[in-house]
Amino acid sequence: MRSPKIPEGAEVVRTFSQYEEHVAAYFQGRYQLLIVIGRPGLMKSHAFETRLGPTSHLIKGWAAPLQAYMESYWHRNKLLIFDDSEVLWKRPGGRVLMRSLCEHKPQKLIQWISTTPALAKAGVPQSYLTSSKLALIANRFVFGDVEEYDAIVDRGHLLYLDPSPFEVHQQVAEWFWDQEIYNHVGERLHLLDNVSARLYIKCWERKRAGGDWEKLIEEAYCRDSNLRFVQAFEVDPTCKTVEERVKKFIAQTGSCRATYFNIKRELTENDRLLAVEKLEIPVRELQAKPPEEPNLEAEVARAQEEDQPDNDYQSENEGETSHL
Image 1 (tube, rainbow, N blue to C red):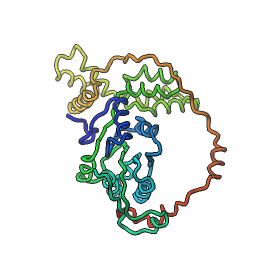
Image 2 (cartoon, rainbow, N blue to C red):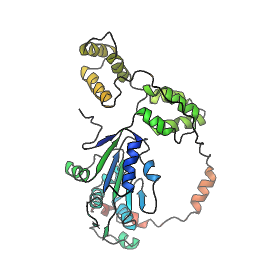
Image 3 (cartoon, helix red, strand yellow):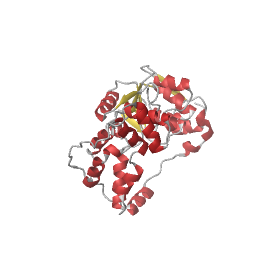
Image 4 (cartoon, rainbow, N blue to C red):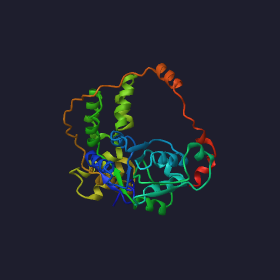
């Protein structure tokens, strides 16, 4: 049975090398629409950001539909990447814009139906043609009704990035700098859930602040005891039948029979059911250097000196952004 975490119609990608191949194909213009979904901290955006150039444009973070419409006009015919796209997808106008941009046509007509002074002020027409292709990056992508979801998924390649803890650990070695933290995490990979790049960064920040970063790992990331029990009972030689394993699980945890089988199914789907032994992690000597300490006063001063863009059009007629 497919895990409920995996979106309907998604292809599961377990390695970063496979993921990089898909991203490279998008930047080569092979995909009209690429949708990437995965839990936070998997460096989903990094593969796109490192390839940005004059033929592509990244729209990152919060973007209202009207702003996204104008950005798409200013960068028409480029490869467009919407990061944190679930924010835009939440809004009806954003979903209409995305569906228009990912149509399988050489030239797509993009329209803003309602009139607003913001477009004229920004020099953006109410309709235009573009050949842009679209990439969407999100942690979740479940907003809108079923028909809207099916319509956009049917037009593109939907990837669910779900690498193993070992795969994440190997990828982090390409850019992380603290050998002590890296080795410590590696020795405990078989006990950790939801390993992400942010685990390493948070440990480094806690260590730099003089805090107990090892405790952070143990309390925030160590696997749920229920998962450990399921794994242990699956290889317990004293348990001859499934019923014996379930009975032991209920006695040890107080959880129910259904919980045992739900956990077992999830572990099986992620090839972790029998992963009770300590993983053999290759020794990696990190090469990266830590980031420089920021000069906060200088950063604030520079921000105050920079000319601020005219963002009046973002606030004018805010209520009209849902009409697209």
